[in-house]
Image (cartoon, rainbow, N blue to C red):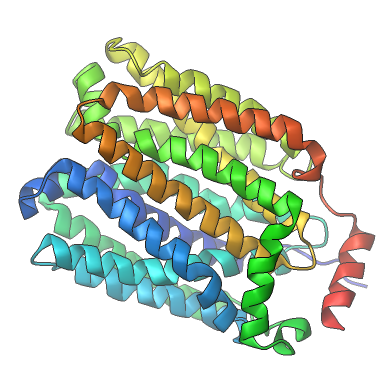
Length: 408
């Protein structure tokens, strides 16, 4: 009997799609001043682009995922990336801030479905017991978005204008659609999903939040992401205040921020199937210390070092959080993945909104302290939850047993 292997081409295509999704969602962070000047709005208003996007994604993820459960999974992923292409093209030519916001909201509708379907599909493309490793491979796309996407997009936007940078996202997404249609295998819905009506799927997705492990994972996710995006959304004005970094220097810092994250993802991602809880707790401690160090104005070198550690810690966390969502509810992976995506988007939206409130009130320096404080809270929750929320990988026997139950 042939031993199952990792479908690397398909994982790479999904990872590339994730790269453009993450880059496009967070690109306003690097182009905050350019978009504000180009559309005659304040930097705080541009920061709210992340809030509105995350709010729509959070509200729409569960119902839209339930409605698409009976569609072939490879088709769903390709359609969500195609919608991404259309929305980015519209954003690139938006004549007003309102049109820019609306075009991003179209993307937000597809965003939640893409990420909720992403996790279970990745698990099906991996051999038994290696879902965490496959997730880590796909999340290289997320890390590269922070390493290359945002800094290069920022540099491109500063050189040729923010519209060109957003247009490049549409082009990249179009290439991903072609790749997905060529290398992603046909993945029909599981029999369990075909036999359940959309209304029942929606109720199941909502009901899974009552599962204590899923609820705790969502709480941990929301807490840490709120803190992250409260400060990260305004990293441009923050490092400008702390170290005078802007323009090319800001792009270089964002490049280093993501590069350290990519290295950390490579070193730690391979261990996502073993001792995930301890690693998450350790990353949260590093996140708290590095983000908190940015509160005072320390100068160029300390600011750069703290930002690099911050990037390494946070960029690696979603690998472990997303893997945990698949493990704590192995019989309801799509539903668990959907509510995890909702928690993540709530965190992004709430964090960007809190950041906007504090920046508008003149409290920019408070943002890193908020990030550090919430990272500590999340770390305490992780320690309390332990293996109940961050279990090690399923054995091959358990994996086959669950798959057989789902197919019944």
